[in-house]
Image (cartoon, rainbow, N blue to C red; front, side, top):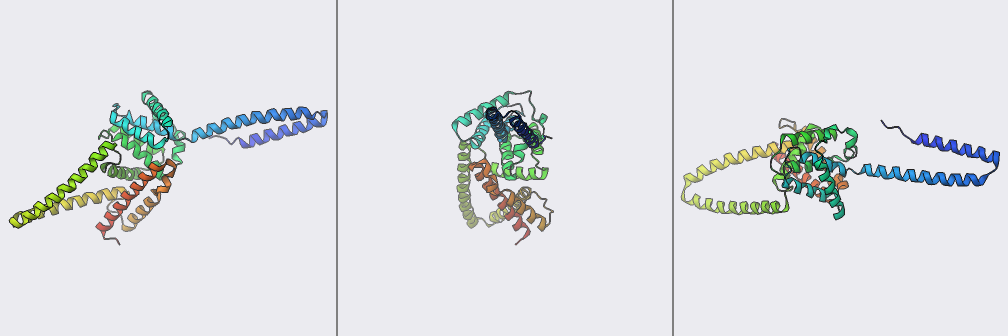
Length: 316
């Protein structure tokens, strides 16, 4: 544990002042004292500025994020283009100017080539600045790591291990992580962490599915007029499918809220309120506008999950 240097500095300065006072009393040479104090303040000012700059550099958690991204990307020993594109997107999120982004990408690529390095060898102090962030901010960082791991649509065991180690260092519990991952999966399925081209493709597919549903509905209505038996059979199949979908939605909802389906109503309400506070967009403001947008989307998923559970349980 690091000691506080302030008392030592105060003692040292007091000692010098006393010595200077005694020197003036004995010799009466004030000019020497003026020059001495001028040089002393100059040296002290330089040391203070260097220490301040070093502390400010340590406060920057972004290099640690780059290191974590590199560790997750190379965990499966496949440095894929889709993963690199995802990392670039994350860099654009945390670094604003083009110069900063280029420098960050170079730093990331340097980390990526350090095959002998293992983040597991780092102590808790390495993650200190990120650990100090709000829960919403930390969860957004974890989702970015998951986005890199899922970029190739395959969550490798080594990637899972790396992220598991990181969340333990950030003070995230397994229950909290499961909730974060459930929110991420829901957002990922909706195309929030895909490239722009994939997002357009996803949106086009959604629109196409919507058109198909409308088309199928019309065909279904025509079929009803011609064949009652087929309508009855189709109705039963639809009920079975809807029941299955509802069950899946409920499971996803409970996962997002971070509770079991056996939890009491009060426990579910408590979990929802806690998440609503943790994921408030203002709590992610320190990471920038994109983080606020993603936190807003996460809050939307939490609200949707709450509505699903409310409806299933008849909570008012």
